Image (cartoon, rainbow, N blue to C red; front, side, top):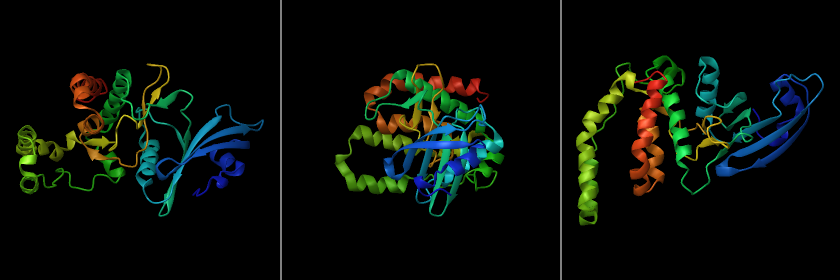
Length: 279
């Protein structure tokens, strides 16, 4: 496993890519505790015409990347029409992980930080989530292959009874909790037994990203020219697709933005799931 950028030698890259790499230029950064690097490769005369001129390399210490590595390995075994970067090398151990994959920066970029994404970017994200969730919905064989479905075929059995915790929360907060907010809490808790039924229905479960906020997508630089790509799969899990859909809107949007965009985006997502073979 690669543990330092100095180990990205021409010999290692040549073996991984099955093409003679004569030189590699590395530009690196260290966001959020990981090491990211963009590689520009120079090949010898006998290189494959499909050899990639640029690659993206990611590594980190710790076990946070184990899920992401297993995810990309599973994609190679099972195949997928979900927009994903091609991976050339992946490995993890107790002390870290690495991924070597296509560099998408020529055609894609992330949304501007700390500024809400454009509507068309949100729509592109919904299209990608719809394809992801429809592809793996109810596929217990795949979910087990991901080591993310440890429970019985009858479905999940976790405790959804949050009433005691809410009672303690309300006693602590008292009149500081506005009546309108209190009514929302109580409506949600009352609905939990019914909502939890979907977690006991195998056909309702799918692979979810688990951290699908709008800055974990790469969007095409030219609107409509390519699909949006989901990145950073360390938090992947099993659940219902709407968990991913709601995640970015609930955590990172204002109430005004949600009221303006939410319905249209959820409807677009639903149409995308149906078009991709779900229901």
